[in-house]
Length: 463
Image (cartoon, rainbow, N blue to C red; front, side, top):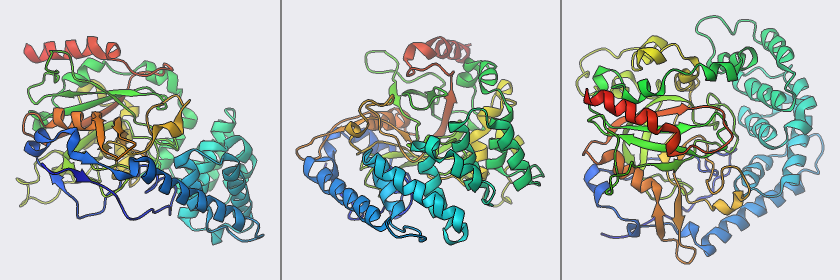
């Protein structure tokens, strides 16, 4: 089998973390992979020259140049720095030049106060996301004033989250601002990003998490009767997404996939976006809830790399028939509409009223898409010292560890390939993804955290 090389010719830095920071969107046409092909792949079949020392240096130099260009342009007064978004993306990916980013963000917020209308929505999003991620405390005063001008729900929610990150006592103030700026937000259909924001401002998240339904119910559920007999990936996460989660695979028969030695298959899994924004926000963390999986492909995004990704979709992004994998039999039937009740119908009864697990549904309503299950070509050394090291954050996807040769960019080890093999081992490449937060303990998820529930779920399947 020929080695698959991946060396994109473009280096798009147009918006914060979309294409640069492991952004998950793919541009057709792309290679799709059958279960038989995935079963035959070996790590030696893949290479990404961008991961070699030479390839990585070229990308880093390009990024540093964009930062320098933006800093030079920041001297102009009363004018938006159009180079700032590219620079902020580079600062985020390479985790460098934090002081430069602070200056760019604070200058941009000052320009927003003077004339917000001259800044595009995407420009606003880029700056507010950077403020939230890195500079919340320095930006809080400017952001509070900006909330009185923002008229788009997404940017308003992002700025509110940034204020709350810097000022834990601002909930009442933010709730009042929300009611004043969007007096009709609670009218049906409720705006999903503002609905999620309002819950953060009014709900005791720790108390709610303590009431999480039994995990074994979720692990044993057939994902609605129509979804029985399909493989399922479970990605177990902490509330703090800046910790490693853990992924396991349930086979179509209901038992969890095991390794050749009889041990349970599991890999570290990171569901953390570099912004660390909530899952209803573009480029935020992977939302909690149920996704559908519709096969495997090779991304055109160089930071994802050539290893097959698994194509996961949230509700609304996937039509109902596609989500429940009946699209071929429903061609002559009028398309069914998504509702919250329809989403809940895929869940076991004990989980249907659990609001945090509806985040994936709200994310779909908010327009999120392209949240794939993929590998990574990003050098984890950029994040040494971070709580998620040696993982590499994404733009909202689920990322498995991969290791590449510094000499020639050849793949040395891939948890992503192992995950794709485990998911498609039955010869089926359609199924589901469950992203579930276990608790808020400040440590990565281990197999011991979920084994009692896995065993209990398997026992139910045998009964």
